[in-house]
Length: 224
Length: 259
Image 1: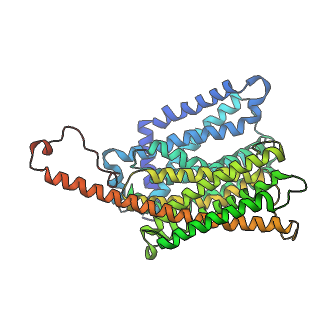
Image 2: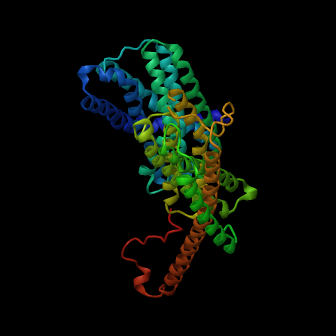
Image 3: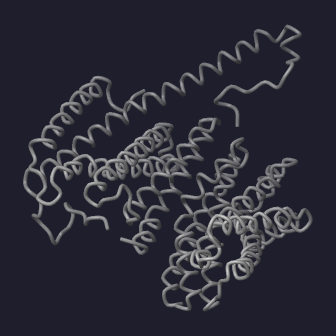
């Protein structure tokens, strides 16, 4: 098997578990929608504030939900010594990393699609140019999934995993929040030329952390 | 146990103290007040050196982490240096932010501004607060060293990305004075001297504190090892009695072996 077949195997396993247990669907997705509702309570919905700050709220919500998705990605490995099986499976650690990250990314994309619907419906946001919006979202999602998977394995097996991952991950992904929010603002305003530099930055972040993850996943899995 | 020879470390402590006293004298009285900002500008002699040390400390953490990960140079020395330097980095970053806020209030009129360098420094602070939190998690020294070394490098890779993204986003901070090539001599001689001397004094302080913190880390590890030996000895000695064979509750493994 080559690297990508191994990654597909691992991603398929994680997504199959998700399809059967439906934890992300039944818990993480409603969580995201609840956060959008809470933002409407916190910020006055009548004065157009929500529409103006919608991109930022959207990405903050995605990051919070991503924390749950990452936590879930490793809690399925902690039962029945699954992580030991993963370690001894003989699969390339880089492939394992790509697979786990891809599964998280797919879950996040589904979540983002639903949340985009929520933002359009509830926050009265019109989308000017869809292309840059989708590209920025994909680049940001890959970056978040890669860093999240990396910090997830770093904290896997530690008793303080649930509290440690946010404090490690959120500062690292702060440029993703910044870039994705600015790109979304440009795309919503129908000014795609302003979005491209940010999409470039998001892509560099994604590529860099996918590379770091492929290198670092093996040694971290040894300790998990 | 220490990075420096003990006698040298003690001497360095006294030299550092003397340098800080001289810096205070120059900063408060030796250097003239700024033409525009008046006495408020004197905070520069602490703020800029503190920022310099923060960057130096995080750089040393990244370097030491890399040296730990490189199989040929792997040694617990580098793990301790990385941890000690990161703690100092967080300390000096916090100092930079607090001094900057005190300086910003009279000069800019606000404690905090969403300026590129301020935001980058704040993100840097939180990046390494997370790293220190990871260091506090009890686990075996080897596992902790590996985790922390990788985490330090992941965080370090992020610094330029944070810097560029935030710089695109917004830039109020005054331009760098000393390293600006177009403005060769725009700073009074005594002021420049005080600033450079401040950087030197803070560097000495950094090296001194790093040595102290390193020694403390080494002592802590020694204590953990000894506690483990004592616990094992007690367990072996009590193995014959029925109470010891059947513990009533789950027994916490001593720090240093638990995961």
